[in-house]
Length: 337
Image (cartoon, rainbow, N blue to C red):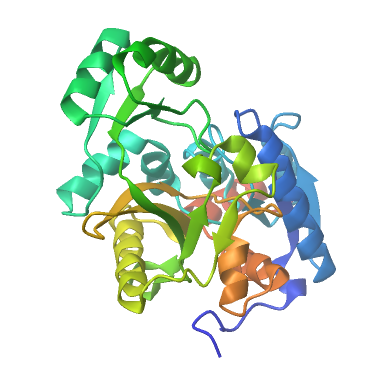
């Protein structure tokens, strides 16, 4: 019996479900793959689930279509950043994952790092830069190698690892294509790991850690989703004490942002002293064939369909008042809620 095993609502009680996928972010392609997997899993368990792409459909159609809850399989902007979550709050439709504030903070790597640093949680040093010259200054302050990336993108989109000042202009230009806020981050040499968290508040807990070994240490967009060259070790093969330390750290990180439902935090373990550093948190993690939350869940004895069903059953709103007001407005207008 795993920590995950708990009472799941009968599928018939989950109502009509929209699996939100696609969207308009730079991660649209990955989101479509995630959504297709979730949709198939829910339907296999008898859930009345339907694909819904916010890039092609107005979110108001969720209310008029009689949807009871949403599984958010969107990634990146307008899906993972609190915007869709806010719209669903106004519509009064429960949804999976974190609420508006936690989603918004989690998507913004700079705000996340500021909060973690304030909470005393370890994260690499960083600088927010506005142009190529400031990128050079950041490299002088942080040292080489250094990571340059958009502050509010995922899947390593727009990311460059640089080793000298001559690379700064191109790295800044690439990152700024995706976000006017560009983050320069100290590179931590060592083991790359990631760890999912499930639950909420005091009941939140970590799944097994995954250790990632990418070709030449280059865990980029292509190696994440479209090749089989990257090695994923789960069990991680780390000493048990290190595994437990990382699990405790990611739960602290999850709780500090007010996350709920699920998330996945990325951690580097510094080779010189085995100190773990939090890089970022994903509040709407991937659910593709290469995705890491399902991989970790399998290691804990949780299959993909059970994971999807459990996450859906936990769909909620930031406040029940949203649903109450929505139902009241529907009754007043003569619409069925």
